[in-house]
Length: 115
Length: 114
Image (cartoon, rainbow over all chains, first blue to last red; front, side, top):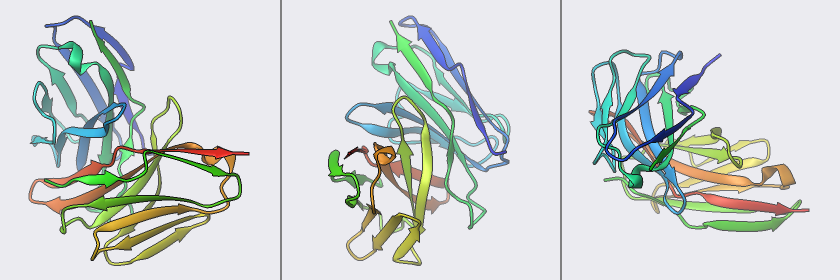
């Protein structure tokens, strides 16, 4: 069964600390995405990737880095976490090559609090 | 870059009535438009989509309309039920040299009252 798994599910970090959010998909999808969800802003795209080794900036990339070391894994890295990065983060994966099944599948989300 | 505007931030309907959520997009290269539902405290789940080669698609009580000239698409939920209450997100995707970028609207909180 298609799945996107995020870890951790909850994280409390200190200001200035490094945070890594991980995402794994077993769907052999090419595209993977990181979003954050905040009240009043909906889902905003941070970074995305179209395959292993690629990362692209989304609409709000400042303060975030991404890494796609393999088809299955896509990480979001906060090198110096700030309280403004407190949010719920969602990872998604989608298969751009399959015309009949293109809707990205979402993970369960990671709730991050930066104190 | 691509922007997606979702026009209704909240929508309240009576059970059995229809609900309509409207979205507009800016990039004429957008070719794929999925809709997602998010129940309280949960993740997003795909409900229906439409591609730019058609202007209407129906799946049970859900209908999506696409007007490419106006760069507008809408979700119609007919015969609403209390379990339809959730946040609905529209999105637009364009295929570019850097993969498929998928941009979302801010969401519409739909309340279906018995």
